[in-house]
Length: 220
Image 1 (cartoon, helix red, strand yellow):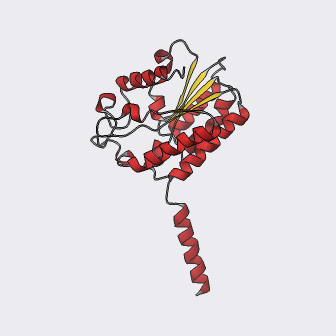
Image 2: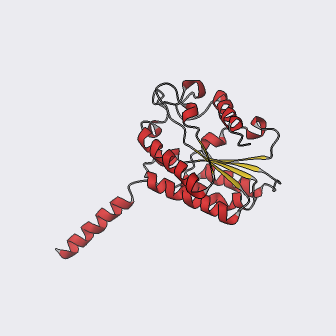
Image 3: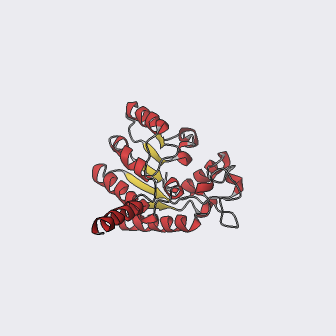
């Protein structure tokens, strides 16, 4: 009986630990990271760090007067960013703009785990590249009128909790917080259809809106 109870407790414990998927490595991730690692250094560079929403932008054309490095990887999450952070740190960038977390939420990774990873990311940047200015950006809203990315939809409460946590993290660690969420909302609080064609990612108009927010806030 005692042995049965021990097995049952182990099983319950395993189920509790394994209730979300924190994996991040797949063929595209490895392709991109291997490419990043081969690229030469750029002085005074600005790094855009994130997932597909960052990956999809032509930053060098959006901001042609800066040494931009796109470090977005489609489908990435906070665990993946932590893993590839050494490639970012070794470049000692002037600025890093971070937008990551919506894919964590889509996999039901708890907000406290996401925020703990955010804290680790910021801590490592501050410790290993202390001259780098860090900008953490809020997660964007989504729009469930579109059906392409169902796992990302209807998670507004978690998005709000993560965004509040990111903002507090910025205050605690004395870094910059950029509120993109409000800038991309429509009247219903969803990702404005003017800026998306799938309810998650941005169209060209969306990236121009992002540029507008950054310039208005004098972050560049």
